[in-house]
Amino acid sequence: MINYRRQGSVLFVVVMLLGLGSDCLAQARAPQRASVAIKKLEGRGRNALVLTPRYDSNVSGEGRELREWGRVRVEYATRPEWLDELTIRFFALGVMRVEGRNLYSLYRKEVRYMDIKGDSDHLAEVYVRPSAIERYGEIAAVAVEFVLDGKVVDVATDPKKSKSLPEQWWKDPRVVKSEAVTIRDAHILNRKESPFAFANMQDFEAIK
Image (tube, rainbow, N blue to C red; front, side, top):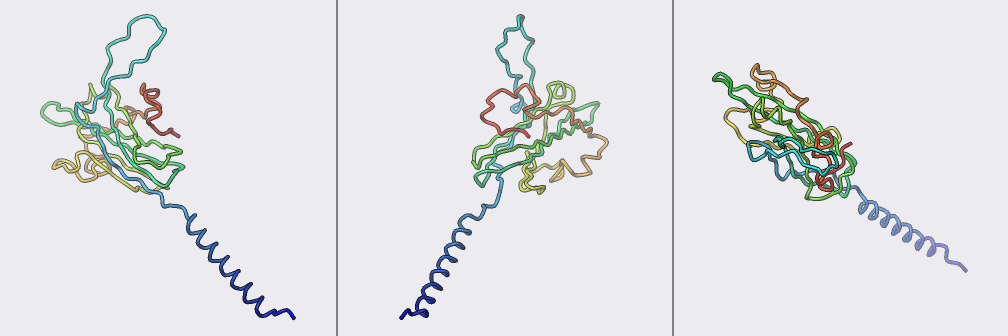
């Protein structure tokens, strides 16, 4: 005679174990929370100036003297294994002394990157045109905002503290709306727009 009670108990245990196994598997496969960590930011002063890259060409004649660009560079880390998209907002503040007073130029650039592999060794750069550096002065302060899914997840500025600038000067009305500050967004380029587009391409993420 078949013992249906015993078979039912065994079946119940098997179902429970399978259920627990599914729960554990689901937890193991749960997506890791996306995050960004800024490691280093640089871009102000003479040390941040870089020469226009020179490429070999079959065009005859000698090129003109290479000019200096203002470069804002940030090093950062990401997780999990892949990010579909990451937005970085770059800000640079140039300063020039004119007739005894400081005049400022605010450069702003938003760049969207795609397919960012989880790593601790990422680079991103933007460049201020040589004519802007020559005409409106060197860069005195820089900042970046990292944006994931529409939210700012990390921020950095150099210098970290300043007696003459508010904490988040790049969006503070006392700076942005000041008569001494001129917005010059057309003078700042991402790598794709600049002569640096083909220099060390493997070191940078694809721009969307």
